Image (tube, rainbow, N blue to C red):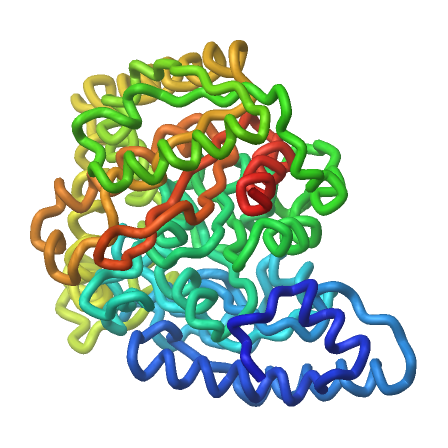
Length: 477
């Protein structure tokens, strides 16, 4: 059984027509997951027993002649900061390395209702803070195309799981690029949804005004199948508006004739790698051939996006992680100390990694008395200008297309000790995050060294159906 040829649709057909059993499929996926994990460190936990139990239930249903849903019995991976009842959810941090949630996140609950078959929990940067999955207490996830390179982050494990055929889809989170960038680096499709399109309930918060949950898959149609099952209003998350969920799969017509595509000049300047630019230009030519209209546009506040993000995000992170003090949540320290201050110091000192400590200090600083107005308040004002930039551009064009990352995957260790260079990996993904917009990564080429290059398609709020169709059109071409 060659899982590299399998998509969700193909696998669903095979299960229904009894070409293979769900147990056979699951054993093959688990085998692939273990092999890939030994080499690339993709999973924090592999849930073999749970997966095989679910597979047996699916087989029993098929044998009895019952219909199965499109995701029923399809192997998947879940990022390890999304709560899974009875299965460890560590956030790749020593602070939570033995935490077993008593309940499922809403997205997991929805997928379980759809017949989810979870292969395992995937590796990530600690508490989703990073762009390379090097800041995990379990060690870095390596790139499936070349193990000397990073898989991207923070959802590197989820992207690599799909790229290695360990599962057919996975869930990740995207706060500033953590789905799109690893999808680009690993050569898979990844979707950042509109802020509020998918419930965040039961997902450990990083930056509450930016966090989103979305899928990775091998192609756009598979992304649409998953999104159909996880999108929508949730009473447990007040940031999910009552906006109708369209039929994402039915809307994949592939017709983009007359569609106006904006290409921001700021995304294709001298800071973007030459091979990346060439791949994007080739993709734009294909869009033109399919009848789309290409227009150059400008997003002048792009240059401020990273600065805004690295004020707003650490501020919100420092507030969200304040609960992890070894008393309310998190690990107890080895030595409790003589007073509460010692206890907190020891618990957080042992439980948090260097990057988390760095971001907490940055966040606490920009929220402190005397600096709030100078930094956080000003960043929020510039955030409004970034939103206005996008709104102006969407008055002229239907979607925006450009690179997902300004450069291809980099080597493990290359940027880890230089936080500023690591933060610049988010330069082209954070603008859409700041504006709360949906954005899709679609593979569009490779470097001369065989490393993947990704194209980012950005749409107006709640227009996931539009950007998915544009991505589908590109795949069809």
